[in-house]
Length: 129
Image 1: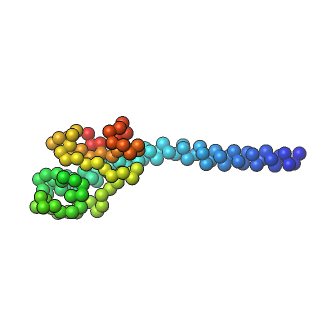
Image 2: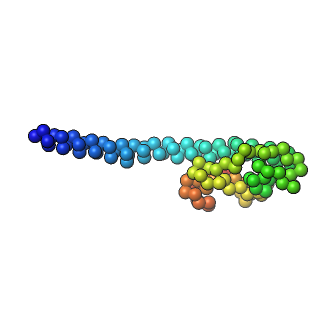
Image 3: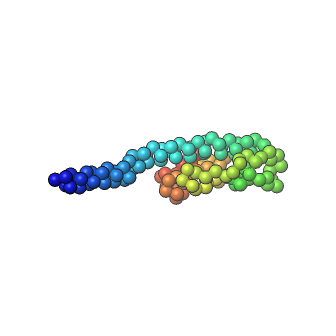
């Protein structure tokens, strides 16, 4: 009788461990994705946008690439950078996509994160339009 009780206790402990390892992390993952989305929006509409706007204020045009925010080019006569310390990557580890002039914003630029799936042109892209 005592050995069957120990057996069922061990089974119960194993089931609890499986639950903790498999189910609990999935509960928090939705919050993690939400915080990643918020971080990408903050980069696009905050830090990177500010750097691009400062570059334009100094040079009267937006840079050809995000790399121009880090190093002076011959075209940027009034460059007062670097405008960023490093090129940021999105919360999923991908480079932000920058295009000037933009397809969505032809008078300025397009800036986007390819989102969680890592593919440009899908529904999870996060852009400045």
